[in-house]
Image (cartoon, rainbow, N blue to C red; front, side, top):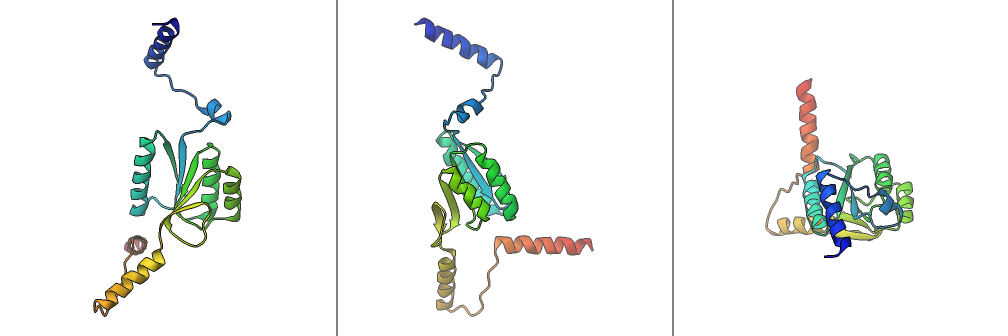
Length: 175
């Protein structure tokens, strides 16, 4: 066993004993990859986003990436600020759940030169990479299937609508 290996093992033992936490900032500042993926979600209150986060986290951790998650409560100005903050961590990629963003947000995304993945809806216009489905076509196909099966009265109840109904009932109960 060489002297370098012996010294490396001694150093590793001491670092473990003192619970050393490495500072990755200098490595990141030198242009190295951060091994971090930024994720901006519009709401922690919508179950679908929590399911998506669980999937992203599972794949990211398998490939030794960390996730940095931020929530902007469907506010485009807050989203812009949160995305700029995520970009300041020199993230390797950014995952977004919506396609509408401020002009400033788009400018920062262009400047960052990292992969930007837009999830949920597939549309004709997108920033970089899109993953999801065409929700308008899916709704059309679903409605046509219900009509062709003889259904006369159709209705839809979405997660967001349920959330809004719960909020209205909560406010009304306090009056």
